[in-house]
Image (cartoon, rainbow, N blue to C red; front, side):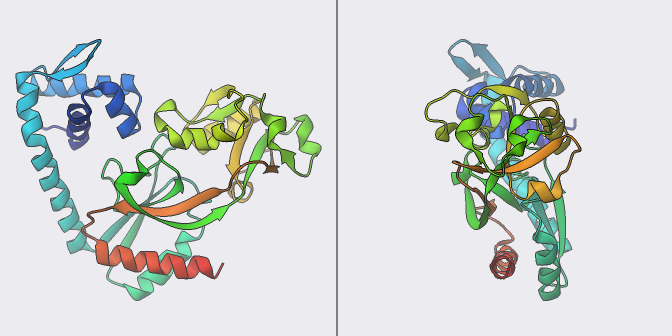
Length: 293
C-alpha cells in the first residue's frame, strides 16, 4: 500500500492540533481541502482515523496508533531526503514571486562559484503557501515575504525591504495621481489571498493600517495571472514596487502608495536543517550581494 507523505503530514497536524480548523491554518490549506485529504487517507488505509463532532476532532483507536508512529516515520523520511540531498549536493530553494527572488540568480551564480559541487534548484509556489514550500518540507530554504503564518517555527533572516504600491484598473480615477494616499483606497474592492494564509493575507490587505475600517474583498486569488486579471476586472491590490518591473498587463497600472508599511523579504529555513553549513554560505552570499545593490 502506497500513501503520500503529504497525507501523513496533514494527519500529524490534525492529530497535534486536535481540530481540522487549527491544522488547516497551520498547513496553509482550506478546511474543506484538508477534510477531503483526511478522507482520502482513511480510504487508503481502510480505517477511520477520526471521530468528528462539534467540539472538535478526536482520534479513534486506529488513529491513535498511527499518531504514535507517524512522527518518527516522517522524521525518518526527512532525514533520508536530506541525506540524499547532501549526497547529490542539491539545495532546494523556494520562492513566491519574481520581485522577491529578483536578485537571487546572481546570488546563485556567486554561490556556485564558491561551491561548485552544489546545485541550487529554484521552486516557485502559489500564494496559497506563503512559506514557499517550507511548511510541507518541500524545500530546504525559501525566499519569503514577511510576515507569514507560523513564521516563528523557522529561522528567518531579513534580506531587504521595498515599498508597497497599488495596482489599479487602467480606467480608475486615481491613475492620474503620481502617488495614492492609502485612505483613498479603503472603500475599494481588494484582491486577497485565501483566508488560510492568515497574517500574510492581512499584510497584503494592510488590515492594521485602515483606521478600523473593514476590508472589502472583491476577489481571492493565488497566482500572478489571476491577480492581474482581477485588477483588470475592477479590483485593486497592494503590491511590492518590484511588481511594476516583473508583472505587466495592458489594463493594469502601478502607482506608489503613502500610508502603508514596506514589504520585507527574508530567507527562511528549518531550525534543524541538515544543510546548515551550506545554507549559511548561501545566506552570506545573499547578504553581500544585496548590500551592494
